[in-house]
Image 1 (cartoon, one colour):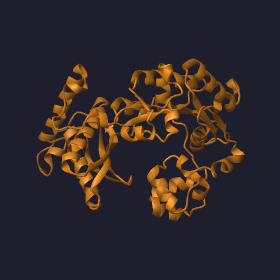
Image 2 (cartoon, helix red, strand yellow; image 1 turned 90 degrees about the vertical axis):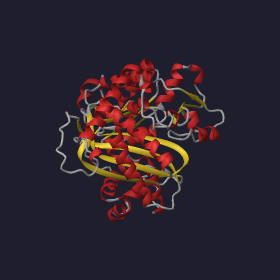
Image 3 (cartoon, helix red, strand yellow; image 1 turned 135 degrees about the horizontal axis):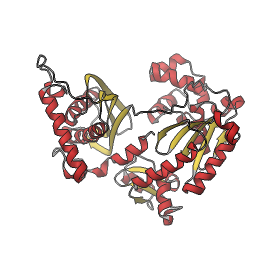
Length: 415
């Protein structure tokens, strides 16, 4: 880990909405949202009214009646995001791109060429504004975690350099929600303990954090609160999971709704896996209730899968296991599926039919292989004639209520 502040975190501001305002200057200065049934991204003008990504479109319009929804220009997002990161790449080859609109950069070896890290950050911001036409915020610090927090504090369109001698002074007054890994649920749990700032988190005994959040999460957040982050900038990154989710407001927790929704999500996740010739062994399902509490259940299979129906079946079991533990919950607001522990999807090795339990869920059995072959045929038809040309008749969930694959893949895309 560097002993000086040589790690940059560059993050394009309100990226998707900013691109739409760049493409259509009449939208500048106005509250806009990318999406329709669900908000995929919001401009700063819309965020001022409380509009946030992942929010149902109806709720967003209630908060901001003058909100204007626009369709996503995914190719433009890709093009402009690449151009911005290429500007950063002009200063160092040590780039870790963590999404379409943000990246870490280690500039320690570039100081003799371009001057101080602060000077490089200023040049990056100026060039992205002039050459790409978009605002970008940059944080400079000694660790990745602190650099990312600094870029968030710098928003919109700013620059913050954290001096190594003043790290904790800068960090400890900030709200815990800025920490990497602290979402709304974790934030609420910490608030119940009276922990609202990173400094309060740092002063919380480790055992108390681990009891509240689990050993792994509690230990990690405790270390980050003291800026103990040994991670280096990784120039080679491959996606560790593939996921999809649908936010739907308030829906009954019944089979008529859960089944089609999970098949829709499984179709999206499995299609993306097969497109990358990958399969995964760990399946995770997430259920969020109407009070925003969420529960997850996961299982690690003996063999990696990428077949749509198998994934949907496993996810359905996980969702119902989660609901069985919360019998008082009658409505849900979100369902999600993730596949992790990914590996290259090799040619199927057929199994001898010795164990017949859930034969159709094992990829190497006759039934499992048939499902995989059927999926590949569907993939080929979609590739030639478009995604809407063929699908599963049991999938009733409209595209309007879920996050499009193009958007999710851009948001998760490493380079």
